[in-house]
Image 1 (cartoon, rainbow, N blue to C red):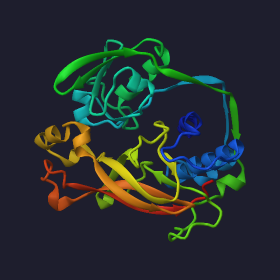
Image 2: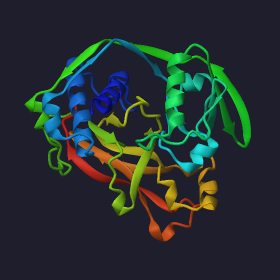
Image 3: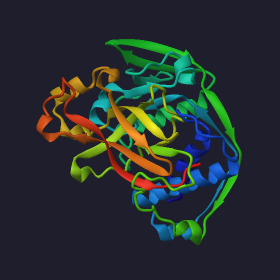
Length: 314
């Protein structure tokens, strides 16, 4: 449990302050408190941590340096990515990945001359290749080399990765957080306190209903940030979400997988959400079973908001 929380909170700390749609300035301490509670509640809702386990949780983390790469990469293990590389869904303009020439639609097949193909999955079902890439981003930030497949050809990209120094921190939880639960849906009325809403792509999607994770490519045409996050603060109002699907590959034949592997930008869909303050919207995709074989025209899936929850956002 500590490993799961440490990883999630590290992503949280590296990402504070970034958002595709800027929210009003808030006190940093208040922001950290809100985002930590949100992260913990997502873990509880996903069933990864039991609420009673949080009552005695204490984490101590030393000061560290972590990379800010600026790319959305599908880290889940799929047989097709095991053979053809890690797919890049989006790149933040002006970020490290953009600076070395990485583009949406690329597939990363090697890092620092070490192949990322055929590495399989870890015990949790994540692609080992993604962990190899993360390790390289930390170890070789000053001189990173990537080999990518783009438009049927192979390119070697080289450059540096921005690093951020994080302070040491201690997290102690008591019954106040442990007993917290998601409130009932806000029904679109807001909570009278919040000044923003959230879009979440945290993977707790109910697959039994043919729903699967979504990849959030852009909000109102801008790459969402931070790229390490799975929850994004947005201002209230009508928001245009650009979405890609991350449906489990077992749902498709080898021939269908080949079609799905075409450049990612050809598979995006726009989806509109009327964001209310104090509401978190959980974004996913719906497999349209009757259109399962219609891969070429992209009608086999649709973006959906599969759940809403009241959650204070300032």
